[in-house]
Image 1 (cartoon, rainbow, N blue to C red):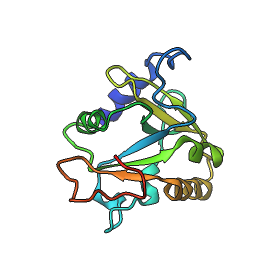
Image 2 (cartoon, rainbow, N blue to C red):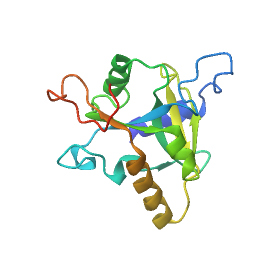
Image 3 (cartoon, rainbow, N blue to C red):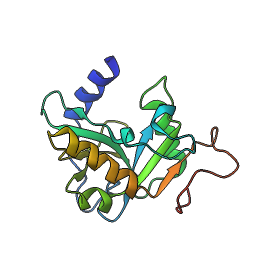
Length: 166
């Protein structure tokens, strides 16, 4: 819980989204990755379950959101650096990548939300209050995923993937 409180405090004080002239890691034509820290959120085959895209309620703004890592222009080594520090001491076991267009297609928004030392941070917002609708949207995001990236230390000989290379 301490992590979440620090995370939300940092998030709510984060700098504004980058202007059009700077690199925007969360971009409409790009993808975003959702870190996975628990094996139970993946199938035995390593594919994501809908719980990967669970939301948390922002403590100050009150809306539901899902934290993501913008993948536009981000080296995979940086993704794994973030995967080891964002919820330290936990380490990400995977990153599920979904195109931003897949997020917006179902009526959600994907916005940059840079944080101190984590400019790539973004958030999926616009989640419904209705639980059935949220679960349906989570299932849609799983169906829209383009890859499941594995950190080098956990990657099998061939990474679990659905067609997009790391």
